[in-house]
Amino acid sequence: MSLSDHIDKNRLPEHIAIIMDGNGRWAQLHGEMRIFGHQNGVSAVRATTEACAELGVRFLTLYAFSTENWARPQHEVDALMELLVETIRKEMGTLVENRIRLRAIGNISSLPAKCQRELAEAIHDTHHHKGLTLILALNYSSRWELTEVMKKLALNVQDGLLSVSDITETTIAEALDTSDYPDPELMIRTSGEQRLSNYLLWQLAYAELYFTPVLWPDFDKEDLYQAIVDFQKRERRFGKTSEQVKVI
Ligand code: FPP
Picture 1 (tube, protein in one colour):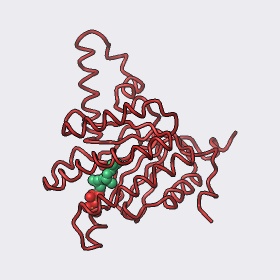
Picture 2 (tube, rainbow, N blue to C red; picture 1 turned 180 degrees about the vertical axis):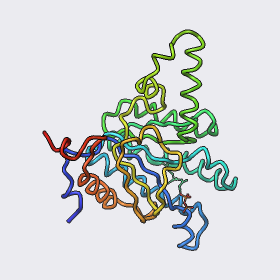
Picture 3 (cartoon, helix red, strand yellow; picture 1 turned 45 degrees about the horizontal axis):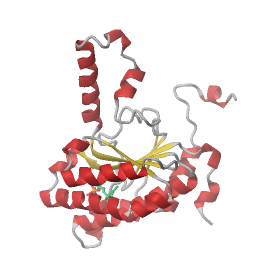
């Protein structure tokens, strides 16, 4: 019996965001180098992506590399970039088979050229897919994204294209990297850490947060189902009272 049987397919979160944490600790537990954890994290990426596609979740955003991750030892950064290129190449079959559309958010133009090329090609080759949209957050951080938005809007005001009184939540949301996607309703972080770590701070304003002690390489389809079952038990009030949201 799978936990997926307990999921109400009519009340799925439309967009799930994940912080894939714990690769380094997983590797350490297995007496291996950190990169071994990242390599094994790829199977969890595949399982989670497939499970979302099978269920009918529309958007999945994965925090694959933060702007802060550049501070890691150079050999780990290089290995992560290499793994990214390799994974995109190897997983094209999974993307095609499941009709998954690949997208990316973050400061992509500062990634190594090889990474940018591989990513651009995969995004292009999957742009017509109508299934799950898989969004990789790469060289991403919320503060970077929000700073870029502020610069963009300030320039528009300076150039007379926008007046300050026209700046609304919608104007800001439309200037974010995530403007094409609805806000995530569920945010999952693995490895027991309970932080947002500069991830989608604007977009997660009303998201349900789910923390699991499972280390990312061990995260499988059943762990995802468990998070969705938990999500469906919660009452989402958006500032209203419990009585108000119960009125149909
Ligand atoms: C966090 O664990 C994980 C990362 C910074 C990298 C995630 C990358 C992958 C799962 C591989 C490739 C992904 C894609 C989408 C192609 P950590 O290293 O911070 O773990 P620790 O906290 O235990 O040290």
